Image 1 (cartoon, rainbow, N blue to C red):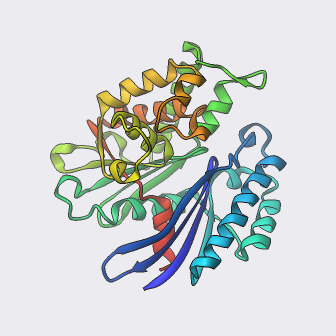
Image 2 (image 1 turned 60 degrees about the vertical axis):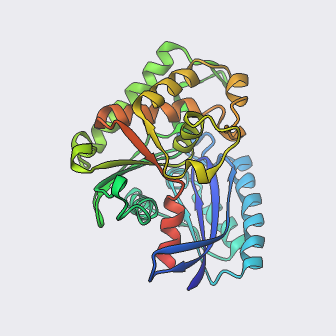
Length: 319
């Protein structure tokens, strides 16, 4: 087996996985999996640049991760950067900082590459499970973009679109530098309109309207923090427990009810939800609305929630 370290740096969070990978069995044996909310994409949709304070938060997390990677003796390291760094004019500054700290150059991957990694990470364990044997529509709702990947044994169609919980929150809910709390009906409608336009765009490539037919064994698989947080709320957990959330099945009715609750609540009320990460309090409403819109568009009656995602796909790519 090969010990690998995978780093996924997105718009909202930066995550690390150190694991032994066994290609013969398809198993990842985890030694460390951690996440920090750094909000690298702060203001990128508006300014086109990575903010200095966002870069410093990200570099601080990289310093911590570098120490973990050294202690655990990973033989290979791959650092993948996604939506925020794709969009930023000053991404060279970001690249230099990561190289200085971790000794590897961050790969600013395309949306299609991001989609393929997400698909591999999410479905490698599911193949052969009677309740979710595929084909799959994998949906990765990030901070700045959302990836749609349809396939079975491999990827058949993929598309990345620029809707994410951070991007839509900053675009529609920030007024005079402050987040509207709770959002108005007009603001919610504006988010929904953006999401529907993005789904129209995604459907040019990925067959959303026919990708989640339970009678044919199709499964909708949802990834990333917005989806797992909604799942934790639906499961009424007293604290975040990835082992319970992983491969849970959340119905359309549950997602609709939770989305309404989140969009109608105050910052303080959302912060009191036991499974809520502090970094998601302000953006979870938009993330939940993206998930709800996807389920309604595809006709999915439920979503299979996966804690394994692009990070696991990155690990497999270097195993």
